Image 1 (spheres, helix red, strand yellow):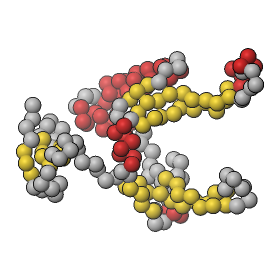
Image 2 (cartoon, rainbow, N blue to C red):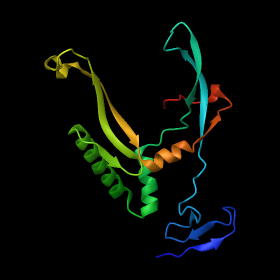
Image 3 (cartoon, rainbow, N blue to C red):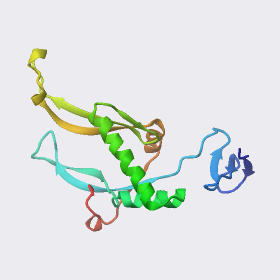
Image 4 (cartoon, rainbow, N blue to C red):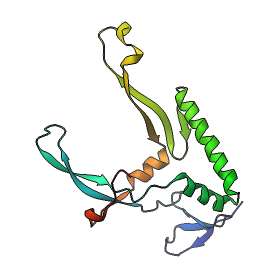
Length: 174
């Protein structure tokens, strides 16, 4: 097992460096955990109709998604990290995602740490008697992701930065 070495570098006097095959990882000696990376997410301000009064528009902060990361890019990153051929990694991801979909469609939740748990959710019309609730009343199906504890912690430490040029910003929903 790797052994910690004390450092007094930019991480401060309470950090240790552990050398692993993937490179050094910082651990805070006072908490025994890795320090949180400061993540900055950009946002833009958009005007939308007020849900309570459609006649009055209000301004809202909206996430600016810088770009969409496609499966091919993730596959390439895994190929480089693991030293496995691209085609093999692509097939593993494909089979994995098909299994996730199969479990979701069977009515199961799927736990993918450290991301979180995926499940299908929906709503239906409300009825006075339970016998009157039928499958054709089910609507608004969606996939819900409940973040894992570590991801929730990272979300709570997310910093927001206003994108300076909203005209040059891509669509916030790309």
